[in-house]
Length: 321
Length: 226
Image (cartoon, rainbow over all chains, first blue to last red; front, top):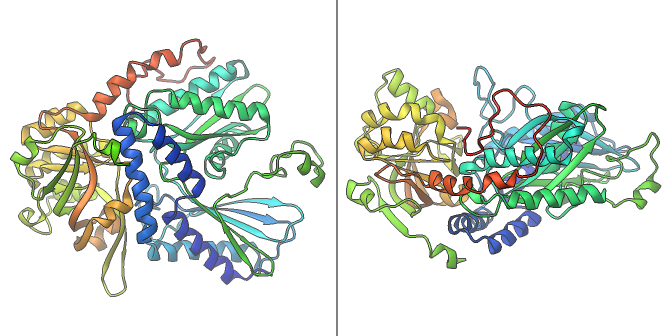
């Protein structure tokens, strides 16, 4: 039985670490880009960001004052037992959000959309968001938080089957150029692309692709994996770098997630995470052990299952998440 | 790390900034600030400009550097103010306040994110001898937070909230910041945009147009959304 207090203290720790410590995979991605960048200004920006990550870790202060709109991704093992159930888990996550907002401190970004009411704790109606997924044959609970801003760098478009890969490339370029100017997308970033599903699914998949996969991770479908790399190269050939200055640092990595969609359509979403692509994950085991990591391992073979029945045997025949 | 940094000129300025100091700055220079700066964004602009409220302290002591931002900050139980990191918010929304703000506050330097348009600089900034500095990244919140040595006051905290209050900050080597507009109203971003735009058309070569256009769609990728 996983106690509520353990969920709360773990979530508080996740909020803190996500805001302060840049994940290692993303850091190496930026370092690689910084060593390749030839534009003077773009290169200066990347090196300043590298210094900034160090300052954040040394001082234990947030790397970016826009600590985003805090949210959680919860993956629960099918056999996991939570004391007080999921209602207690949600209470613990809301409480940890409010406490961490004060303690870190995080910026109290969350306001009512119309009345601009600010509780100064990042908690309100539908905030923080909590998304769920499940995993067979497991008794742990994984909690991930990401601190992502919310104003720029995201777009949606209904494409059609006839638009094909050309349509995907055009919309990708449109979004990267439009939001890349003046660096509003806070590039270079991990770019997530959602393809298919219903409109809402497309948006959710694209955001999860940006936020919940690490730099260097490839989609298990080899053709989608190739498209990820092709779009990454395309983004980096725009001629634009950090802050929209002349350069070639736009896309640290590109991740695509798909969902079966309406036969007449090919909806697409585009999500740029940011120059401070922040995430932290913890696994709470049934015996109370807590393991920290920065790879959310959200897209498991079970998540990407394609057929009616699913057996763990399929997992071993596909790349493990 | 310092090889490329050496290519950009670095300048350290003390606030309040003087016309002679601003004259020497060129777009693309790296600036660090020492002295006093204050935050003010839409709620403070509205309160002072639209509602006619008196500034909470004299602009002579606030200085002439306005940083429209929201800090990641906390008010402790004993009233102490704790600022962890600071990062600017996108500035294009604030140009409509600038004419009156310059007149009332005497500000000569705006620090922000993403800049404003060259047209705004020429019509609003140039006549009063003001320039715009952009934060780097965005954002180097931890480095900027490190540059804050003391929070001198947070005015209108209860009324406007942490994000919108007027924070008065004593800073030391606050930066890095980049000169985005100079006294002639040239924009670093727009100069870079012009160079980037020249190569955009060939990216789309051979890609067929989408089967369904969107309302208001343009093929001119040289345009900006702001």
